[in-house]
Image 1 (tube, rainbow, N blue to C red):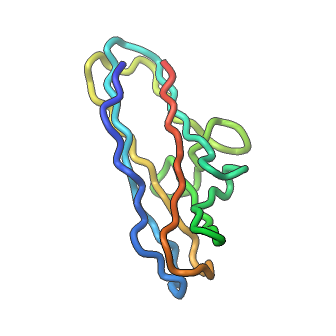
Image 2 (image 1 turned 180 degrees about the vertical axis):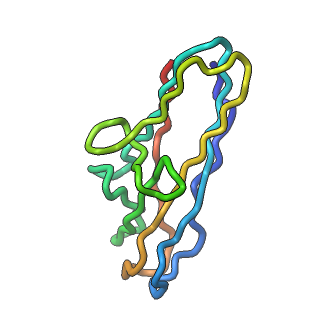
Image 3 (image 1 turned 90 degrees about the vertical axis):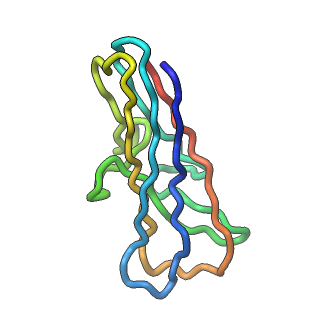
Amino acid sequence: MSWDSSHDVSFGSYDVFASTPTDTTGTVSFTCSGNADVTNTLSKGGSSTFNPRALNGGSDTLNYNLYRDAARTTIWGDGTGSTATYAQLSVPNNTAQNLTIYGRIPAAQDVRAGTYTDSVTVTIDF
């Protein structure tokens, strides 16, 4: 199995006055060198819980989360605390697998202007 790439989940600018959430996507890509069962998990990042995860910006935090589905109803985590993992049986040999990570920052969070970051680890088990 090889790790091909990842594309950050970048939210861009967050408008504290917007009445709708800020949504974005990122991807994780891998190729399996043999038919294998694969499970992908995401860490909590710098947060103590999966719900919510937090982007840190100095003294402020901006709540967000990462999801398995476009409707943003299933939190992608490690399978604990009401989170889901990505699991696929018999991943085809030498076929790139591209997984979409759906991100959301809920609306109406009153935070200062600045840069907010978090670092989430993707684990691929086969």
